[in-house]
Image 1 (cartoon, helix red, strand yellow):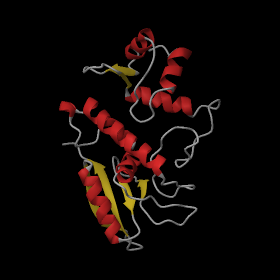
Image 2 (tube, helix red, strand yellow):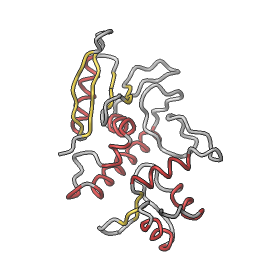
Image 3 (cartoon, one colour):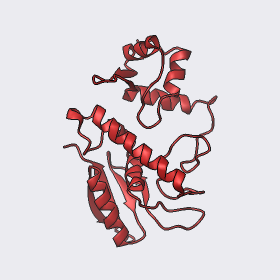
Image 4 (cartoon, one colour):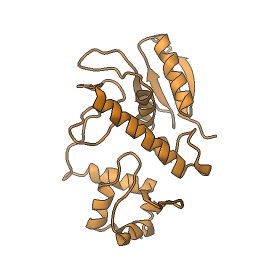
Length: 213
């Protein structure tokens, strides 16, 4: 059985970039994480280290442990951790600082695609996006300028939610025009999108999945 990571390794994992999983630590710490299959060393310069899916799972377990801080609501920014807005959050701020944060997060995601997709492809989602479907789709929408729905202000906008289907999210909008615009954005970001109708309500929504090829 693989030995559990030491306290020092857990600190390195917990401090990983929440979006890309990029790690910072001593050579010995990073090498030990690689040995435990919790991290990998990127083959291209500058040969940074990143969390593997197992490392991401461990990081989320650490974050959710009893001694850890309470989970942060998606729209709260006081923690300093970026979170994509899925729609329905309170206290939504669309000021210049948020715009800069979203732009930086999107560029970081494109870089993660380049580093982890075969042949450095940036036109389709990467493994991180497939394990964080709602956040990934919401980031693509917000980065393109779409507004999320606001819970406290009554702002109309998109809402991204998980579905029972594997690798699929539902996207709802205030009207048909907004849905079409969201569909175009997601397709440009490498998602397969189809429009559907809820049988009971007749409401239209999008079903989006990360494109593999």
